[in-house]
Length: 199
Image (cartoon, rainbow, N blue to C red; front, side):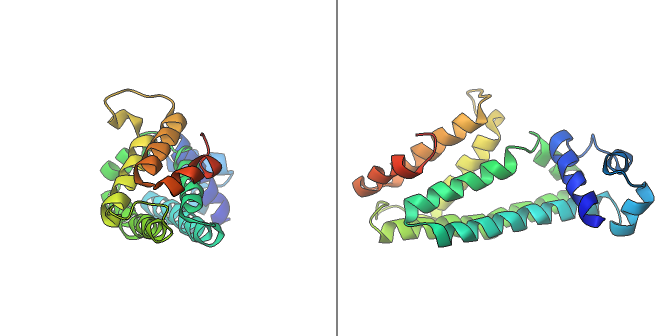
């Protein structure tokens, strides 16, 4: 029963935002009583926390699989690139702004996830690419990892950009391509069109 409630909460929160979905709305859509929800989740904060934890664990697992499956760093980059868009494109714009205002501690946890999980994953990819001769040897892995994280954030929140964009998927592909072309050697560039979607 808790899984049913959690899945429905995830669907509603991501589609309509945190403020627009009450516990009554959740109970009605999940086909349970509000009392039943409180048997499994202490309050809305606990429910949001579990939704975010599940999202993080899914992403961690997928990034780990990318590392195992990838033939080389460019291939790994292309596999990794699918994860944030798959995960966050279905989330209502402004969800994380609401999260920061309504549940600041949970928002802080998500920011910590970016720092502790995503940045090391991206850095490892940069180092791998340099070692394979696919990425330029003079680039700074820490800085490139940070820039990659920022370009993902901008693609998923295009309102942050001066030029207003409505096609976030197209923007995401453009930024991925731009980033790879900026860091790859000639050998690496020859692999971009082979692996990166949207080319």
